[in-house]
Image (cartoon, rainbow, N blue to C red; front, side):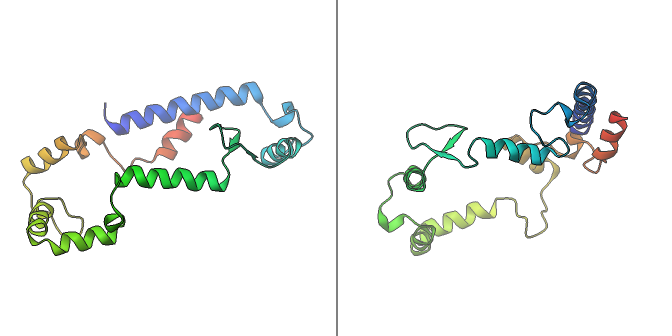
Length: 163
């Protein structure tokens, strides 16, 4: 089954579920708010009823609260540290890393060779079919044959399934 066929099947399944939900719910009359004509208005009414602002909780991650800005700053600093792996201040920005690579001719030459073997989006690619297939295999990607037609009108598929 191609990606196109899977997307069509998905759109049909979503449309069937939506039909079922509309048959059960019908309209907004069953909302337990005074706002019955507008779902956004009903949500805002519920939001206002619970205080309308987020609860700050720096001790526990939650879907019903948020961290303070200082706790968020701590988390971001921790992520930066994890990404840089404890790099010294001499190599803790992309500019410093670029400067180091440029200064080391052997590393730069090896890097240039490696980059030359990569697929480029800035120029035409003259790779053979076998090389292209190997590249897709290396990154576990599919080609146009496996994906199907990317120009499929999914809205038309959805509307047909919904009808």
